[in-house]
Image 1: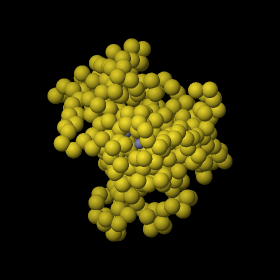
Image 2: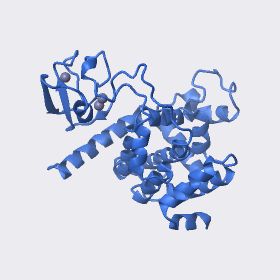
Image 3: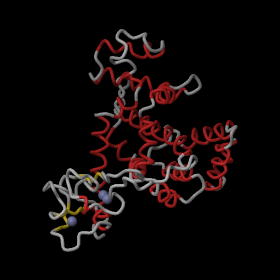
Image 4: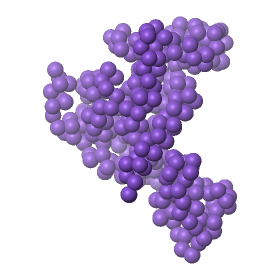
Length: 328
Ligand SMILES: [Zn+2]
Ligand SMILES: [Zn+2]
Ligand SMILES: [Zn+2]
């Protein structure tokens, strides 16, 4: 009932209120309220294409700010010296032969426009197979062509991130990511029933979620550090993914994952006993350090099959967008 009434409130106010609660020394009430809200908002039994969930996530991440302003603020703490923006087919990019050390260097439009290429031998092109921005990489291009954002930041102090700026991200994103994983698990055909779900269809429905992930990675080094911390935290993954007693859905979902893993052939036979080994704690497995806890790791799950699917999905999305917005 609490969560229901919270949901009816203005999202922005709720997010600001929750963030204030979570910043307190005793934040237990804030943590409980946020969990209740996320249980409802990020319920994987809801249809995947629920934009209401994305809306909520954006407000919560921004903690009461306008999401676009929050993006700008996070970007101002970007300590990355490389752009690394990845694009899919049909993306418009730039190449400067004057600045390039390697003939296949490419720049995203933003880096090109924020750099000084006056009088250079450059051209704009439509990427055939996709690529990545080389701005900031002195192995590929001359430093004089780096944009103002990725010019070497040696000696120049990037201010350290304020403690509470990414607090909401740390708390909301693990739930957001596990929710995506659960949708994807549902998309695999279930060997125990005759129902074959179409994974491609699920990926298509997850368009808004994947777009949000892309927006997050574009926020720069500060946000990417948070994402990396979440994705490499085995304990967090284990707790969210396997499901505690009270979370029957997560439990069912984890069984589904294990059975899919077994039938996929990705899991060597001797590792099928992994769940028990993990529950018994470190050292209980036959060979500690080798394969230990592998099934309980985000990275293991996200790579490489899932990443391939996500990339293919993103490429499809880009094509569709391109067709839809042909004029712009
Ligand atoms: Zn760039
Ligand atoms: Zn740049
Ligand atoms: Zn140039």
